[in-house]
Length: 110
Image 1 (cartoon, rainbow, N blue to C red):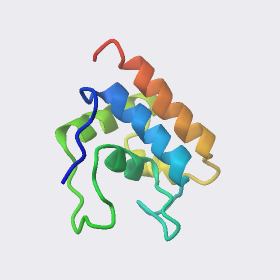
Image 2: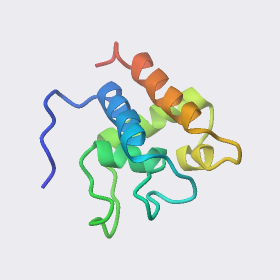
Image 3: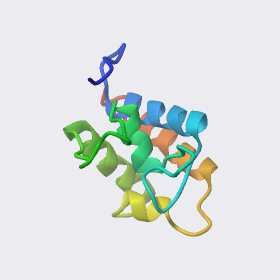
Image 4: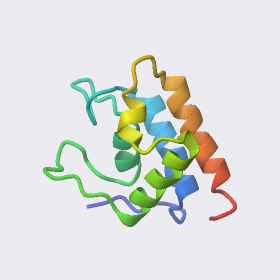
């Protein structure tokens, strides 16, 4: 069962929650979640939306997750969030900064 958010979930709130997930669990590349429980950018979005990455046999994104992913792609000027996340040299600070910037860019849309 999905936990009920305390406020309406928007692109902005989902991005801020995802940034918190990365801060709490750690960040990884090349996989949605590594053996330590660290998550990639997309894994953080799914987790922030209440998806249990261990229980999910097939990860299907909600409409909000897809719209949020498109908003991030526009911000990073890249057509693939996983591809951007996995780029050699990428840092956790860059990933969190993109999530926060996308949140603020979309705060007015909320």
